[in-house]
Length: 162
Image (cartoon, rainbow, N blue to C red; front, side):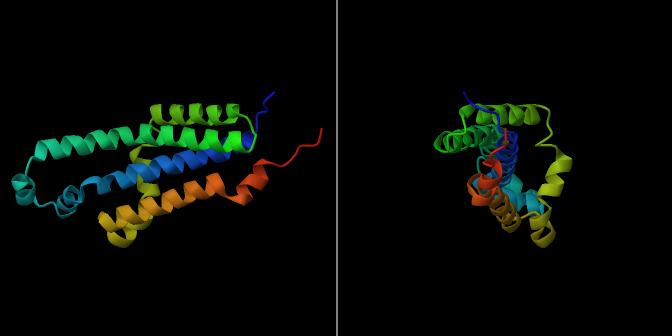
């Protein structure tokens, strides 16, 4: 029988949230020219941009689906880790459900949360390719550390005395 491990559920939920934030930030690198135009607010460049409607619609499609792409990636990573370490897949499924609820309620993707999460890069570089890259790498590093750190593994694997 599979046992619930609340520490594992919490660590994988947090890792998934950081992964989703990283993907939401790194999606801006899909079209750096759009990012540059937005950063400089250069209306003339935006007007002269080739196939602007198509580029903007592709970008927005990626932006709005990146949370769900991150959710799927999170579930796959979490499930593979829990099955490899013989924790049981139920813990990954519960973390998956928690993240779904947080996405649907708009808690993960709210503007207030994003302003706090994306603050380090924007304080150094403003809203630019450098800040997007820095924030994405930091958030992805935190997520991967939460998934694969031996320290987190030791915390979640402690045996509880009967």
